[in-house]
Length: 118
Length: 108
Picture 1 (cartoon, rainbow over the protein chains, first blue to last red):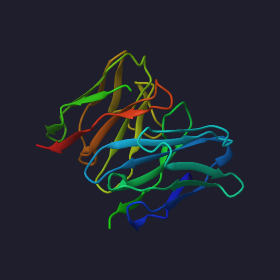
Picture 2: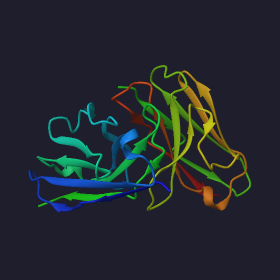
Picture 3: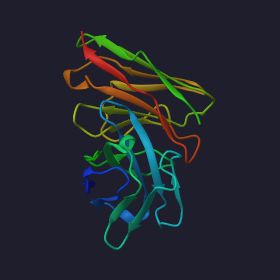
Picture 4: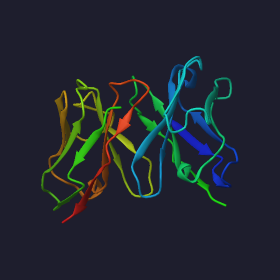
């Protein structure tokens, strides 16, 4: 069955960097675009970034553009989110999600919490 | 950016009753709309895509309708496991996917 498992969350100081990972299994990872979506505590869902199945195209929300980088390793079935210059407003649960169709997210990981605080 | 507005913010419904949730887009999105269910402490789950197509394994009591700017998610007979927060998402504008703020369905 499809499984997505995020890791790498934790407490990080403002201005520092953090890298999140998402290990995929149960499907042909290299055939699907993948998203990162985040959710601040008690708030709604916010799309963060997408990477094409082959890694050749990447797009970001304006709120993270220039600070976050999405990447993937299809040989190891892993998705990444490199976050830099972190701000308090980046505090959220970060989910990875599979995209079978133009932006629909059909499977989600359980999420990893990133807390930006001094 | 397309703004998605959901109403009501909270819906109080008794088990067995029908629930009707609304989602409005700030501009036409054709039928490029998805609905997700999120229970407390869990990841979202895809319910509906293409405005009206149920995702794999979703019970028939969930149905979606609408096109353009007005959309509805209907739960025909609420079960205990259906009390959750529901989000709509537009995927008409690529690279700027946006979600509604959510509707919480609570037990009356």
